[in-house]
Image (tube, rainbow, N blue to C red; front, side, top):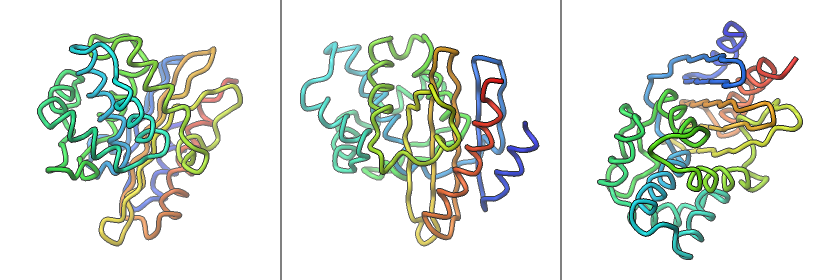
Length: 231
């Protein structure tokens, strides 16, 4: 499995990968400590930090917060991300990172949330927070965020779902960013079924075009999903 994954990863100019399968105990990391611009996958972090803060104080999201959260995750709406990044604030975002053990994530400056520096290892920790019991996010918060990630619009359902088998629900968030001419293309996802959970993180940079980056990510994901398919 690892050899096939590494071969697929080398198809991208630069890539980081982290995989964990709670069903089998299989895990794999490749350049998992390397930093990448987050682009829009940071929106999963923003919502996690918001839910962490709200749970501690007001108990549940307001109607306005819920509307922004839905737009930010399911449609990758940047204006909604701007509003929630500003509302949560750098202090609470950093508190969430600290409590989540995401010690290698560096928040973007000012309003530039897409320039948050992430690693595949930390993104896998974030997906693990969303899919298993922990003291940072309660069951209601986890289920809420996963539900939105399962409802990402069809036009944005590329990336790590490539090659996923039937009967699997994919909880997904993608990110794309020209930096400045070469593209950052990232994709993270938690895959749930009656058999259990597995998670895939693929981060890439220096892609000549967005389509090249998507193809690189999907090439890696297809190898991983085939390797983790039952039987």
